[in-house]
Amino acid sequence: MQMLEISLSDMCEATGASLLCGDGSSLARGVTTDSRAVEPQTAFVAFAGERVNGNRFAAQAVEAGASAVVLTEDAPDQLLELAGERGCAVLRAQDVDGSTPDDTDPAATEFLLRLAAEWRRRNDQWVVVGVTGSVGKTTTKDMLAAALGTQFATHATKGNFNNLIGLPLTLLAADPSDEVVVAEMGMNRSGELARLTAVARPTVALITNVGTSHIGYLGSRENIARAKAEIVSGMTASDAAAGPVRPCLVMTDDNDFGSLIEREYCVPAGVEVLRTGFAEASAVRACDLTLDGEGRPSFVLRFADGWDHEVSLDAPGRHVVADFLLAMAIADRLGADRSLAADAIAHMPQTRMRLEVLSAPGRPRVIDDSYNASPSSMAAALDVLCSMTCAGRRVAVLGEVGELGAEAARLHGYIGAYAAAKPLDLLVFVGGPNAHEMAEAARTMGFSEDHLEVVPTAAVALDTIGPILAEGDLVLAKGSRSVGLDLFAKGVLA
Image (cartoon, rainbow, N blue to C red; front, side, top):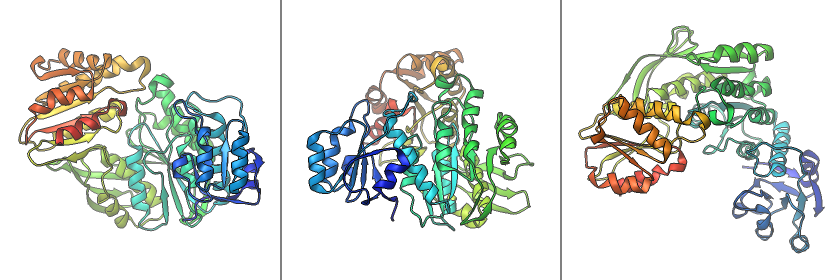
């Protein structure tokens, strides 16, 4: 895989960086922000983060064979001397005015965005698929990569590298031989998605849903919807691997802001809208949905032209059907074979720490969904827990949800109330004040105090609950990543 290949002089021209020393005709092949990942001819971009200043590791990158190091601070004489000896160029990223609160290093961030925009311009043959939404982005992105990979050379975001740093790194890692690039795009604040889509220039895109993630930054769900709709601003037509494709945005038919997004963003931009879901009028829908004893859905996939196909997914939960339908609508739009695409998604490997069912001899089964959380994904995970067969007790260990701002108490209360309505044998809340908000709501809804625990940390949860769990029990571990419930899940199975 070739990835980025660009001369250092062109790199400077595209980004506004200054060449402090080195040969501008030299080539950079690939980019990294981790000095430990530098390979010969890689360009190392130093970020001055809150905890680690990457500029301090520039010498290490030079010694590892980097073709260039990009600094956001003045270059020490010792570094310039070392770079000269090793034939490595030193660049100084252009300072930029203003930044968003999430920019750890505005100059380095803007350097990456501009460089990625140039690489995208040089690879106009790619069909870029943009994936955004409050919940389910990574799952849907993985489904798209599996579906499109049956027919096209497909490059996709690794993990959830979807922010102002991750998105440009995704594009810069794509090869000129790739035909489709599936780019996950996240955001915390208004304006961020506009910056990402201006760089990626997707032809087709989807919004999984409009939830409450980041409501602490944006203030309301309508503001979240408008921030998600920014993805439309960068969309462009394509005439590449999939043939002529007009811009199209796919949304679920139950998106309560779908009409606003279509009316105020898509129609003015000339972007077509497709709806997916369970309604008869949906362009792509699921019929006759059932769940087996492990919570895995089976249904009939049906397109508006009458074509249908029986599908059984390996991943548990009714909510994953919505992600599947979004992915299938995009795959069909790009001309992928429907049957091959559906079967590829149905049998794709499950994403780690996302409703991952784990077991060990003599231990309970654990549903590890500890990667991240929102109020809606909490509800979906509880639904999965209660849809699966269980010989012993059903236990939910729920951690706090971050980034809810002034709405945190109210939304945590909703989580606690929702959990209380479920047939659970034991309910454990993990964290500080918001864990107590969930517990109080559960008590108010009538959940028995004898079957409810509040603990401060995942470690205390393991010490308190771990010893009483037994083979046959089914345990859900779900919370924001910062709560660290993955350690609880591992500990229970140890």
